[in-house]
Image 1 (cartoon, rainbow, N blue to C red):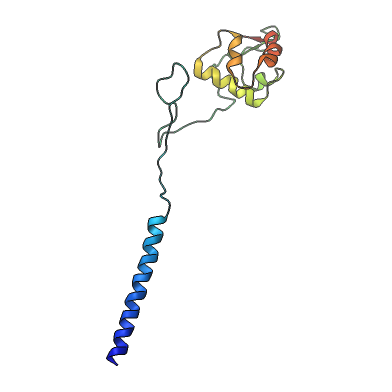
Image 2 (cartoon, rainbow, N blue to C red; image 1 turned 60 degrees about the vertical axis):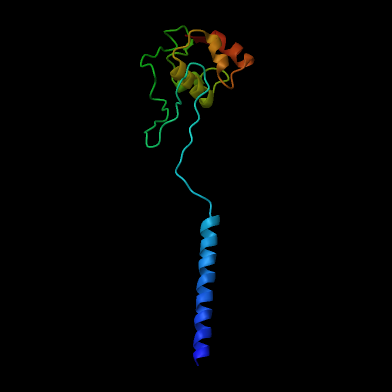
Length: 142
């Protein structure tokens, strides 16, 4: 009888050690989850610090109603041309070859680098090559 009790105790201890081993194995091999965010600094010329928001910092997305410049010239005031320094997304979309994505990039470039001083700066925007630029040139002012 003592022998049976001893065998049962050994069996329970062995089962407990086996379960502990399985749990420990799962804990040690589980992937590490982290809330760490890695921000890489911008490589654009003239920028010293990363433009990425810090953890917990509020950010805002571009809204067509929010323009960097509050003055907008209508097409009639500029002889039918669109001023790329004051136009919003809707006005820029009226230009040939410009959709909402390119209009957003034109405005983003203007907000990041300041007003356009030369229409050739449009070529710095991804998606505007020589063909699109040649179509835009007679229709824009700055």
